[in-house]
Amino acid sequence: MSERKVILSGMRPTGRLHLGNYLGALQNWVKLQDEYQCFFEIADWHALMSDYKNPSDVCEFGFDMACVWLAVGLDPERCVIFRQSDVKEHLELFFILSTITPLGWLQRCPTYKEALENLKESEEIRNYSFLGYPALQAADIALYRANFVPVGVDQLPHLEFTRELVRRFNHLYKTDIMVEPNEILNKVDKLSGTDGRKMSKSYGNTIYLTEEEKDIKKKINSMVTDPARIHPTDKGHPQVCTVFNYQSIFSEDEKDEIEKKCLEGKIGCVECKKILNEKLSGLITPIREKYKEFKKNPEKVNNILEEGNRQAAGQACKNLAAFKKEMGYG
Ligand code: TRP
Ligand code: SF4
Image 1: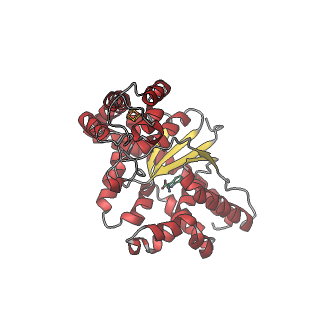
Image 2 (image 1 turned 90 degrees about the horizontal axis):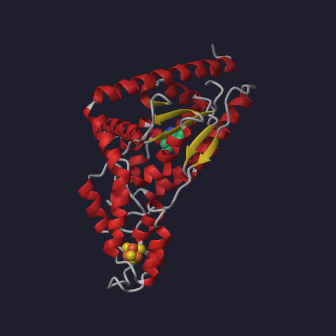
Image 3 (image 1 turned 60 degrees about the vertical axis):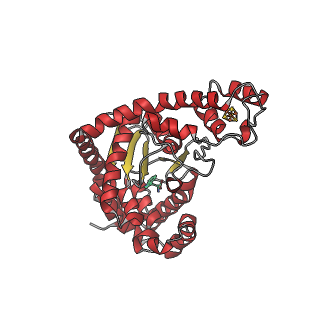
């Protein structure tokens, strides 16, 4: 058990989880549970940095997110699911790491610069905590002495930051107690939004992992197809079609045939969408049903989280004590 390599990953509870979260993370997390000792964190402090105006939403999304995690198959018997803010050691290590973090590292962090540029309401995130985002993430990872962190490419700068900070700690205190983590890059199939644009909550072009049957149908029906195609017998261009982007990911067994038929004008878009609808319903229905069960039993979920918090804290407490000892900070 203790021989297994350690994995830590997290997600910010900022909204309902959608298909992109499944493909980009959860699908992989579920697979990693047996091979590694896994810690999966509801990164609520990270969410609060940008959503501080709605703290109760952060709490609610966090609980909701745990229900979805359990519904997709994260198994509390095989992994530790916990809430960042409930394991107090995160902030303690965050502070210790802050003292050895050069300000320039934070200011130069590409995700920080991008966030400042992108968000029109950038004033909103010009708060003190947000600058320290990567240092808190480094604390999350270092605290469990994680060997691997499953993430998407967008998180690579944070991982590099973590490695640098870990090296700095070890160098400064002449130790090797902190572990330099490596990424496990989530294999991602690029899924676009239902309108063909980038998938984003704010565009309303996502399909949720707990989407109701009729809404899945509605969203698929409103998807844009090949605009040059008017009659079902017209030759289509699947490469420019959003429905085909989805087919190629969710209908792996049929995608070649669909592509061929579309190119030859032998399948209509209505029929094509029907196939996609069946595939997505097949994926989402069991998740939604399990999710609803968990939502109906909040005590059960709270018990799971409490147990997860307890296990995470056990590990965190032990490691933090060892770090402080190495620092000579008794
Ligand atoms: N920053 C990550 C994201 O936005 C979430 C996160 C917080 C995380 N702490 C982490 C990811 C630790 C991996 C490891 O997706
Ligand atoms: Fe797109 Fe399918 Fe229509 Fe081809 S048949 S254009 S792949 S929806």
